[in-house]
Image (cartoon, rainbow, N blue to C red; front, side, top):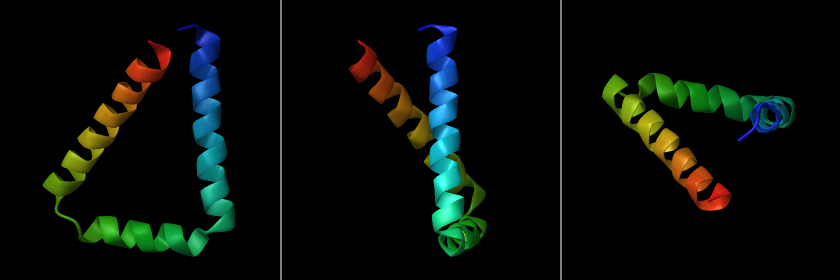
Length: 63
């Protein structure tokens, strides 16, 4: 993995997040409200599952 790969990954995240805010701002507000209502432990588990999924995908796709 090169620094260019990391920069490409960060750029892709920014593009996708920017599109979500630009195309569906009310959806973002509803999602944030749903997150506020979740217990902290549930949010923590969701974050850990998301990280694990990302690592697994990188492992599979990048070999």
